[in-house]
Amino acid sequence: MPRRFFPLFLILFAFFCTAATAPKPLFRDPIHDGAADPVVIWNRAKQEWWMFYTNRRADLAADDPKNVAWVHQTRLGIAVSKDGGTSWTYQGIAKIPYGTEEYTHWAPDIIYENGTYHMFLTIVPGTFENWNAPREIIRLTSNDLENWKFAGQLALGSNRVIDPSLYKFPDGTWRLWYKDERVHSHIHVAESPDLEHWEPKGAAITDRNSEGPKVFSWHGQYWMIVDMWKGLAVYHSTDGVRWEAQKERLLDAPGNTPTDRTFGHHCDVVVRGGRAFLFYFTHQEGPDEVNTLPHSAQRTVLQAAELGFAEGRLTVDRDSPLHLELGKPR
Image 1 (cartoon, rainbow, N blue to C red):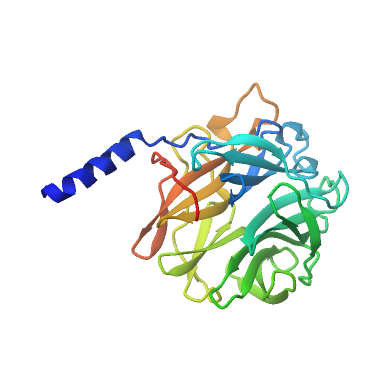
Image 2: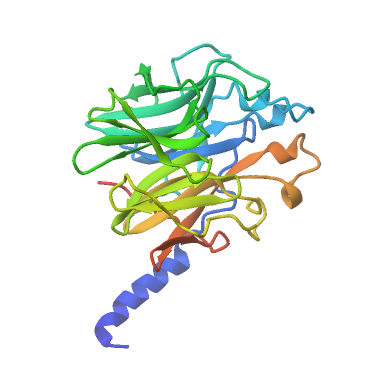
C-alpha cells in the first residue's frame, strides 16, 4: 500500500470498527406498539433528527379481523435521535389542531421551505370499523416541528386520497404524489408553485395498485418507491414525470434478523453524503409473534437499511449491519 494512503486507510478502518450499529428493530413504539409509515426530518432548532410515524393501536386490535378500528383514531408518534440516527427515543405525540379526538391521522410527509416546516397529512374524519370511509390530505405549518397550525385541505378531486409524498424540482415546481383509492388505487400526482395551490395532473403510474409513494433524487435521477404489500416496488425517471419500473422489488424476501422477517412496508428515504438510508416498517407475524402479547401479529416496528446502487438498479441488504450516519445538515 502506498505510504500516502496508509493514514486514510487507518482512519476508515477505525471508523467502521468503532461506529455504532443500528439495532433491529430501529424503534418500537412504547404506547401501542404499532409504529408505521415513518418520515425523518432534521430539527434545525434542536439539532436532532426527528421521526414522525403513524401509531396504530395494535394492542387494542379487535378479535374480529374485519374490525379495523384499531388502525383508526391514531395519533402521530414522534421519536428523536441525538446521535445521527443510530438510536431513537420516544418523544410524544404530534400536536395536530384538526378535527376531534375521533379523527384519524395517517402517513405524513414533512418538508422544510423558507423557514417553515410543512406537514402534509392523511385525515380520516372519524374512527371506522371498516375501510369504507372518506379520506383527505391537509397541510399544516410549524416553526419548530412541535406546534402546528392548520393551513388548508388540498383540493385533489377525490375524497379518497392518502399517503402524500413531496419533492421540489429545479424549476421551483413542487410535486405531490398520493394514492387515489377512487381511481384503481393508482399513484396520482399534483403540482404547485407555492405549496398552497395544487393542480391534479392525473395518474403517475398505472401498471399496479400500490400506496405509500416516496420520491427522492439519487445517482443523477429520480426514484419512486411504493408499497405493494409484497415488498417495495421501485421506479426511476429522468424528469420526475415519466416513470420506468424496476423489475426487482425491495424487501420482498424475509430477513434473517428477529423483528425483520416480513415484507417491508411504506418507507422514507434520507440521502446524506452520497449514501441513501431506507426507513420502513414490518409486521411481527410468524416467528416474531409473541404469545404473551395480545394481537401480536398486528404489532409493527420501524427498521432501517442502506440502499445500494448497481447497474442502474436500487438494491438493499436488510441483514447487513447498518452504520447509520445521518450527520448534521448545513
